[in-house]
Length: 230
Ligand code: CA
Image 1 (cartoon, helix red, strand yellow):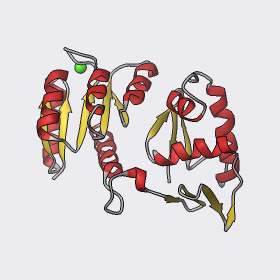
Image 2: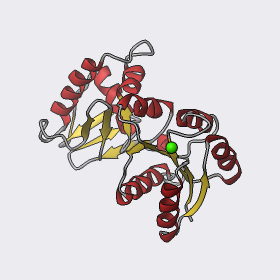
Image 3: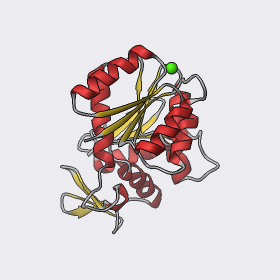
Image 4: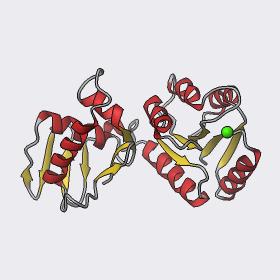
């Protein structure tokens, strides 16, 4: 049984989520504000959190930071906001994905399933850090050996290209924000040099995508970041 914590102050949305989730055999707890959410998360240990960013008592980003202090539970953000800044802030704080309001229930459920699936232990060990090889139909990434194999041959990557690839692959299926990529690959004082990312992503695509102009694995989320899909 998968337990979902819904954090949302709009009763109609809570009702719709509870009905739909229970119909699909999820167990659901609901919190109308951030303080209740943090208490319920500690008491109930949900498998996934659906979190509205606009809460009456605190910003949803603070709830993310509070949760990330002690848990890696997947967090799916509901955002009614139109600027991408706040979504990026939520991702930087540790959210896993977001859905923009008004959302379709099917889309939300698909994102929820994906978030839960990514959090499942791989090979009986604890989480994604233990994945050492990632295979696509076109190439294989060996994180332990720091090698990429395409059609039986090693692909030569520069250290920067490798580092970028590694961050994306370790977050397979998840949106990684521009800022997070820049800070992890180039360093903490970076964050706005998005032209670096465009250049290096183009290089990775050229080396690894079957058709670099129509990427299947290195996906751009305009204005937000990048996502690696297997
Ligand atoms: Ca709200």
